[in-house]
View 1 (cartoon, helix red, strand yellow):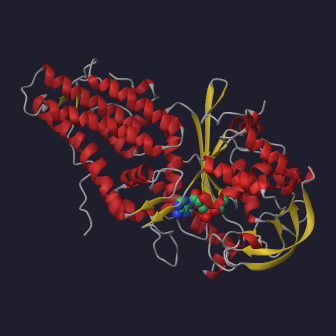
View 2 (cartoon, helix red, strand yellow):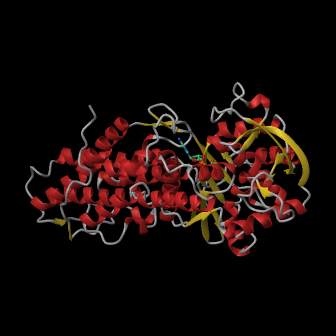
View 3 (tube, helix red, strand yellow):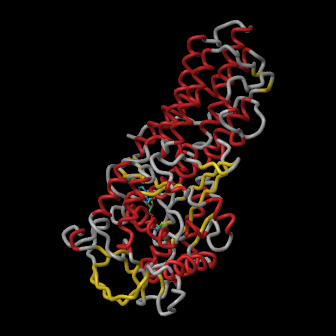
Length: 522
Ligand code: ME8
């Protein structure tokens, strides 16, 4: 039975093959006509945190991101800037790779569509679709938006303008190869019926189904008007239209046509994370292309909303695009990641504001977590001679911790990092409250003080693990300060976060505040 015919249930977020659970997650590959901003970072940090969580959960993870480098839009951006397209793509792709490094993105591969491995995969995948009879030569005239690199029907335009970019569309005429998308209406609807959880949230599932039901037009998939693309293997006068090459990146990286064992291991148990702007390509075209080539459609697509800035879409003209590195300079990488994950749930539109970032930083990081770390270290210094005591096996916090682990696990599993972090911070708050109540800084040293501090240290050990997908740096730093060896990211959950793991008898060190308070603006 193939994975996409499992039917009924939404796909589990990791799929078990024999003894191994595999979790393959992707971001869209970003166009190199733009430089990385926090909208790209939003998707990429979320995918990264999910990948890191699944590594903690003991899954075999493959996390893919990269850059989309062909098409008219890129060729035009290059020439406007006085570059050859290849040199332009090299330079801008590097900026994405650098931004992801600065954000501590743990991708396993970074694909560039100009790489030969990708060209080879596109040729073999498309040749298969051609051989299967789903591609034909035809004449085409349509209304084209270069920004989207797509044709629109009259009825889809917004007063003659592109519904996404708001720019005028142009009339394009070409003799092109077409992909017979219309052949796949019934199969797609059938797939959606059998796999109601394949596209999430459900509103996006409904949107895709509605679009298919309204009738599918065949898609023109090649161009002769420019050469910046992958050559069509059966007719060298044509290059593939950029979307038709771009989607195939998800197959290139796992060895479609080049490493069958790897491909069979990772496909179709994939999770594509993307924003609503490219729903149709991923939720309609892509499954149909897979069907046409005789492979299973992707198991799971999660579609998120826009990250707005001050309630508005980011754009060049409004100059409200925020570069991740500027925020990292102000807040540190962990805090930037935390804010993106905590305050803009995957699904609806979210809003970024500097004020919101400061407020969240002060509340959760400076006051709650940062305070717990420094208080515990200070009191262990004054009451226990700097040696961390072991936790109380019968502590009330044990149950709170178990609940946090269960709730965080469930939330990461359903692509809800904000809930996972909220569940984790509930534990932080409970530990702070327990400390407040016991006030060990006022008490005489002795077993009671030891138990209270041991419990708080154990909470910190567990929180460092649970928070590490969001804040890999802070998690490791906390472990070091409380004297736990290794890296919280190398723990396996849930065993590794069972109550009682803090060894006691180890040196606890005080350091500078992990998250110094920020002044609110104005
Ligand atoms: O569409 N809020 O590339 P792209 C949230 N190359 N997400 C945002 C965002 C925002 N304000 N701005 C960008 C393409 N994104 C194609 C994809 S995939 C085979 C080809 C993120 O550079 C979000 O993930 O325009 C969105 O889907 C993607 O960037 C679009 O990136």
